[in-house]
Image (cartoon, rainbow, N blue to C red; front, side, top):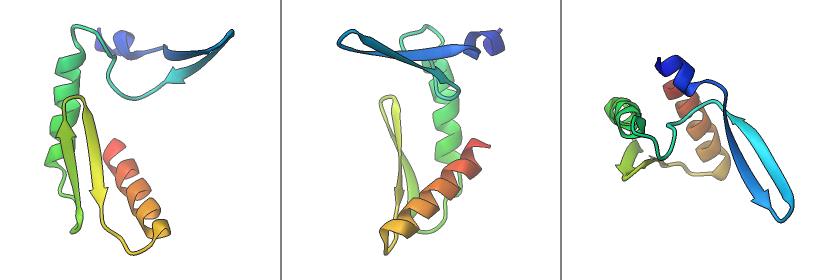
Length: 89
């Protein structure tokens, strides 16, 4: 049941007369009855991850931020991308 609920989702943005739509492959549906339960499952997993030193996940309401320490912009981007890919797989 959840598989069909999460398949073929799209997000649309209207800018004047133009509507831009994109497929959504991740995240919880907003405004749904099941959304809070799905969010809790995702947030719980993110908050249980053993992040490396200098990194942690912080949840608030319906958002998660990954806080990463690093000495250069490139290192921050690389570390963040690596950690998020690892967590999302």
